[in-house]
Each structure stands twice: as C-alpha cells, then as structure tokens.
Image (tube, rainbow, N blue to C red):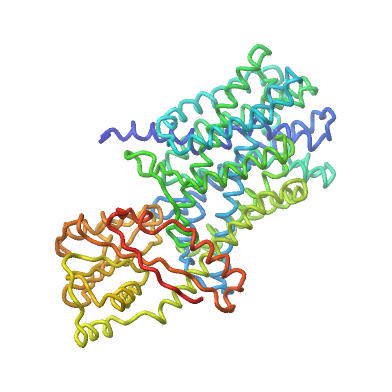
Length: 628
C-alpha cells in the first residue's frame, strides 16, 4: 500500500491528464480554425476578429470549465462519484412515475446520459480526423488517404479493447503531459512574434465582436467557440476515479494554462500571417516539425478517444445497475483494477457509429457541425440537475438561483448557437441519443410491467409455509439459492419447480439482488437476512451502481459474518428464471409495438448467471411464460 499521500496525489493528477483531459486537450487542433472560418467565411480574418475569437475562447474556458465545472459542479457528488447517472441517483428519481415532475427529471437525466453516447461516437471521429488531416497541409496529394488512414486507426483502437488498456493507460498521463507542454511552447513561441494578441485577455474584445458582428455570424462563431470547451464535462464524469482535488490541480496548473497559451499563439500566428487560416495549429511550428506534430497529435487524439470509449463502458455499467439498460456481458480486463472493464456490445455499436460518422461526414470541418449540439445540451441538463441538488442540500436559494441561473443562461446561449447546425450534422448525435433514451425508457417501463405481472402470480410467504405443512414435499440434500428480483413473496421459479417436481432442498435461500443509489455499498450493509421458515432464509444483497454484482462472493461474506449457516460453495445450486414474455394486449404504459421491442431486448439480454458471476456448472434455469 502506498503510504505517501503526496505521491498518490501526483499520480492521480498525472492520470487525470490522460483520462480526463484528453478530449479538451486536443480541441486546439480544430476549435480555433472553425471559429475563424465561421467569422470570415473562408477569407482572411481582420485583426479585431482574431482578437475577438481568442477572447471568446479564453472566457468560455474560464466561465464554463473553470468556474462552472471545476468550482461549482464538482461539489455535486454522490459520495465522491460524479456524472449524470450520479446526479439521477442523488435526486432519487430512479423510480419516478411517468407524467410527474420527478418523472420529467428522470427523462431529462436519461437524455443527458444518452447524449454521452452521441458524444462518444463523434469525439473519436473528429479528433483522429483532425490530426490525420495535418498530412495534407504539406502534401495535398495525401488528401484522399486521410479518411482511410483514420478508419484504420479507429478500427485498430476498437479491436484492441478486449485486451484491456491497463498497460497503455499508464502511458496516457506522461504522454498527455508532454502534449500540454508542447501546446504551451508552440503558443509562447508565436506570441513573442505578435504580443498584441495579449489584448484578447480583455473581455471587451469578446463583447465587442459579438455585439458588432451580424447575428448569423455571431451565432456561427459561438457554436465553433464551444468546440474549445467540449470535453470539460469529463472532469465531472471522472471525478470518482481521480478525486476532486486532483482534477482541479490538473486543470488549473497544467491544462488551462497550456490551452490558453496555444489559442493565443494561434491568434498571434493569424495576426502575423492571415493566410495560415487553413491550418493554424500545424503552422505554429517550423516546417521541419510538421510531420512530427501530426504523429504526436494522432497519438494524443487516440488517447482522447480511448478515454471516451472507456467512459461509455462505465456509463453502461452504471445504467445497467440502476435498471435503465438490460444486463450485458461485462469483462474485467485486469484482476488488479476493478474499474477496467470491456463491454463487447457497447464497443462494437460505438465503433459502428464512429466509423459511420467518419465515412458519412468525411472531414473534421463537417463533423464540427455535428459535435457541439449534444455536449451543449448535456451541459445545460447537468447544470439544471445540479441546481436541484444544491437546493435539496439546503444551499441558499437566492445564491443558487443567481449562480446556477447565470450558468444555465450561458449553456442555453451556446446550445442555441449550436442548434443552427442541426441540419449540417447536429442531427446525428441527437438521433443516437434519441435511440438510446427510447431504449432506456422502454426497458425501464417493461421491467415495471413484468414485475407487476409477477406480483399477481407470486405466492406469499405465509401461503408457501402453509403448503409445506399440508403437502410436505420430498426434501433433497444440499442447498439451493433461488434468485428473485422481489424482496417479498416466494420466487416464481421455486413455485414453478415444486409444482412439477414436488421436491425441495433441505436448505433454501431466497436471494434478492438490489441496486442502491450510492456508488459502492459498504460491506457491512452488503446483505440483510430475513427468516422465512425453518431452513428457509431470505437474503437481500445490495450493490452500488458502480459495482459489478458478485452473488457467490456476497453469500460467502454472509457466511463468514455468521448471518447464515455455512455451506459448501461448490455444492450449492443456483436456480434462475428464464422468462418468455407474451405481449398479449396493449397497456396504458406501453404500446403493443414497444412491448415487442422490450420482449426482443429481454430475450437477448446477458444471461443472469454470467452477470452475477455465478459458475455456469452450478446453474439450473427454469422457463416461465409471463403475459404483459
């Protein structure tokens, strides 16, 4: 165990550079270029336009990322965990009924979570494309190869996911530290040639540009400027992995200064050479460094993409645990670190969406139109939910309204600016998010309906015990664990099994698995034991939404504590239900066609045995038909 806190903090800060700030750290490749193009329409920009855009980017980084996320939003944690799913858990709206205000909050939160998948599809595409496009700056003949090279890099990235990224991830921090140092050095070298760019530090430059430009130009520029802050939301989503303090140190000590210096350097370059508008980032260095910059930028964008992909796995695991998505195959890629997981279905669906974006849009310029709209809407939703949490925690309503109201206005301004890109590609991440949130709501509603159907069929404990007295079954040696989602009543699979076999094991466990709204359930609260009858016990296992449920391990913990009698773990039989859903009639909560979709998802969900880490050789599945 590392007993040196400062050493641990330094490691966490370095790790945050690679995982948290990979996305925003590669935004200088395209953000400034797109903003200037939006203002000049392809012609050389005037000096006051350059100063205005640099000033806008600076103050966007300060207001949105530094003040809102680093200082304010990071306080809205769920026992150290952040992210949109953590916000949903803190608000306690997971079981909200449709049509209520809590139900509306739940839908908003799920939409925010779904938008992260849209972001996850666009980020690798635009990041790697923007890096590889540097090849055509000095060699225009290489332009036709940009898309194939990008596809090759992304295919390789998604292919290696199943091997795990533990070893490579250790290099992320040092590489990104070198990247941020490079950004700063390139920026300072160009600022020295045109120090007048430092006037952009005055917010007047930003206000003057916005108020004097045509409304269409202002909105177009704001939408492009927002690209400079995309990725800022990652500091909240990854807070639980590195800690609030370490993430703030990494931002204020390394990332923010490096980004600001680089954007000012790009502005200084355009003040000296307006013709550099086509590729201001790669023109920052001498000609002989060009291909080295392309290589380094490509590595940095791959790291940024890996961080987004890993975030999608984590988000999926949390959503499954909270009941918003069906159980999926989750593989732990290392035995040393529980947080490193791989979800095959998510990986290849994300790969399909990302490659589709690269092929469909073909350039980072066109992808820029699709990028900001999802993130700006996500940021607005996050601010709104964080406001409600601040009020729930008893903060001064006037201060909350003033601070969060200001940030919501800023978020909505940027969302409005990005909305004009809807037909230019903004529809793509919104379409992906819409599909995901639809599936989430369909799964959640279907689960409620099936549990309602189960409750009508389920015997009460009293009825079951009475039936054992009046019609004693044959008792079989050993222990049987019947898994059930309910914490009351007799598992349907037990009733169904006894109906046909007229037999019951000597010892019976009703095992109920429950997901809590905290990231990790303390071990002392892992289980709750309730006696049902002689040698029949109900044990309720609780897991946090950041944990992978391991039923055998939890039962062994209960035995070790003395809560239940010892048994041979190798001899216990686990009974699970394999339900066949029969969509028989439409119900108010769900149309018939959605019932069919739910039934299809249910049939193809990961088998419960694997999801709960139960050895396949000890599983007995019993089929049951349930009408919904």
